[in-house]
Image (cartoon, rainbow, N blue to C red; front, side):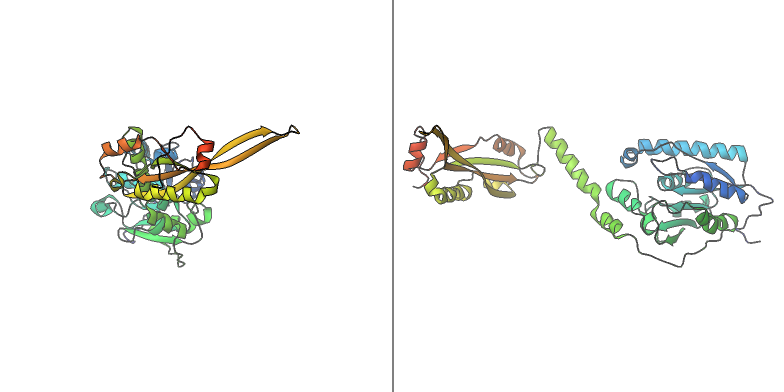
Length: 365
């Protein structure tokens, strides 16, 4: 008899099923039924409904609670059944839990199957080869994007369920055309898992399909670092300390002219943007824009009692946007943020007619 083949008449073989997040995992029940018909003892090692938020938080508190729950259930099953061998089928976050138990607990597992796994390629299986029978089978679905998403948006996970572990002591089995939960059918269980748990036979799938292009794009983005940058800058901004990367700061200047000299007003705005911007050397990025136009509104009633509205162009608001990096002194930035908009007149007869109380500063000089 081969070393890895079990004599079922002489041994008890316990298979523990560990589900993924945010589910009660119906697959557990029909997988249990199939495996029990083949002579295995099957128990669940659940940890309750593990929410997406708990899964994504980059802290160990919720993850460790799940690991502790699964550990206690496996220990209970082992004490009750006293099996000769204890094996595992773990899906998604369940594989993360199983991998942690393999590398930390006294329980020695026999055969292990991961599917849709969120384990990192850096997981130290090589340091714990005495804790399981090699190889671990890693089921990889070509359309499974979720391990790649998990690795991209938070810390502690990997994407071997999307791409493979690529090396001993794991052996990949690729499945084209299925997604994150595509393994859970009666045919799949009978074809792939029953032979593996009975005799250690790994039925290879000869068809290879490259992982989803969406998964590859998500992996390249490393979204968690982008999110962390925004979170840190948001906290700094909320606390009154800002580096300028999260916000745009601006100064406004209102240039006053007449409707007959609108181009001159625009030119004056450009001159202010270029020549009169103070402290420009403080900033890493400056952008200029034209803002609202201002009009003088004259409403009168004609001889036929018809209301007539006359609108004449008076001026335009010029705006300068500022952005700066973390090396800029925060105190200077804070002072600039407190600057109030300035008003500068461009003198014409029409301006004096519409706004006689204003004082001209003589942009044209």
